[in-house]
Length: 268
Image 1 (cartoon, helix red, strand yellow):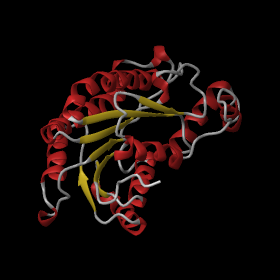
Image 2 (tube, one colour):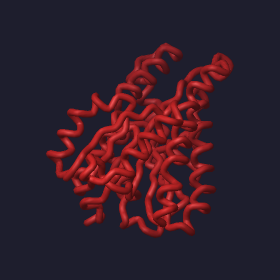
Image 3 (cartoon, helix red, strand yellow):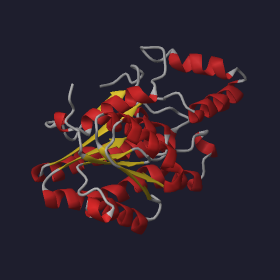
Image 4 (cartoon, helix red, strand yellow):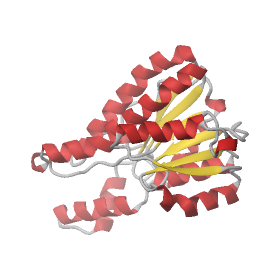
């Protein structure tokens, strides 16, 4: 299926993460031009080379500290405003934000600082990105935005409540802001992944195992018993849904979210 992404400019915020890299690879395979955002853009050089080899006609990398509103605005302006002749990509057609992770723990052991730290990048960092890109897309009356949120918004785990709170807030933003953007030709959607195989997942299982005095393998087995497919997703499986929503072929979808978690979320 042709997703009509050939030579379209797609920005990926959080490109250095496991999902961000998989999403960038999926976009590159469709021929998109890419702007990759990370706290340390220099670390993205190997990824940029791989994306060019996959088929992206042009890849640039930009420093972007989501904790700094001015830095976010500068990075978005640099990616969106400069022509290819000036070292840029031209207007951003689609933007994907896949940044942020939250601290877990026993609720009564998490103080205010832990909650603030957990909300800072995932919630407020994403809001800073949205504030920077939406006026530009509204002015052009075109654009697509995809947020990678998380299934904990609807299926909160008791030991991961800061992340669940951030995710639930983002889904409210997606639903409400889509109403504001829609009349201007801008679409906003979310993808809610369940856990994927990663170093972070391994650490979570090790922590769960220590609490329950079991092995990490047993902790994972118990978790997967709650999913219909009885396995974790791969980053590439999540990326496929993000790439679709970032593409023109998802033209009549906005204000919604797609949950990709192997069936662990029990409510619609």
